[in-house]
Length: 273
Ligand SMILES: [Mn+2]
Image (cartoon, rainbow, N blue to C red):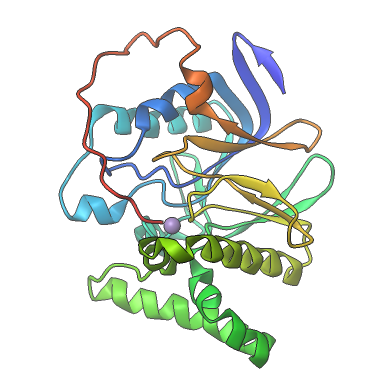
């Protein structure tokens, strides 16, 4: 990481679960984060735009637009920007392999870190079905696991065609707070196992709004967090080391932005992964 005019320059930034279009989205925080952070490559790890919220009532304040403009500008200035849609921005899943404004849309990616390690990058919702039926699938083996992922994908594609929302296990689990800790563990383990299956060194994901870096499951597990509650991003240093940047702590210490104006406090709506 280097400092340039007060900007921290990383090799790579990973941002997920921004939920633009939702009232709970902390777009101003993200805007200030993007102002003080730069990278050669930026991965948008899903749920960047919240299509579900937009469908139930258009909410698109200037700051949400500014975030999009900022990302497009970074792409124009030469940053590689890769967008991996999640379940809230699944409308982009029809556009895999295309690009808009210099932003590539892909289903998953393998990120080669500066130290040679390789990481699977994926939003993570396609594993909801696997997480829910983990014990059964373990008994049934590898083939059943693959079928579960396929079933999950097609099941939700049909729901989408019919105008229903994505069925998300994490949504269900979060309502049952008692089991939330178990759920997070099961999600992390499933993603770690997927990385192992793909013979990579680790996984980078989002979806459960829980920023963390650990090796609890024998492989690097990294989650970008979110911009609804925690305002966190994952950053790769030039030497391949990773760090979670929690912007809400640091943002207040910086001088206010030029266009910073008093905004009415918006009612926070609950956002589910
Ligand atoms: Mn999600």
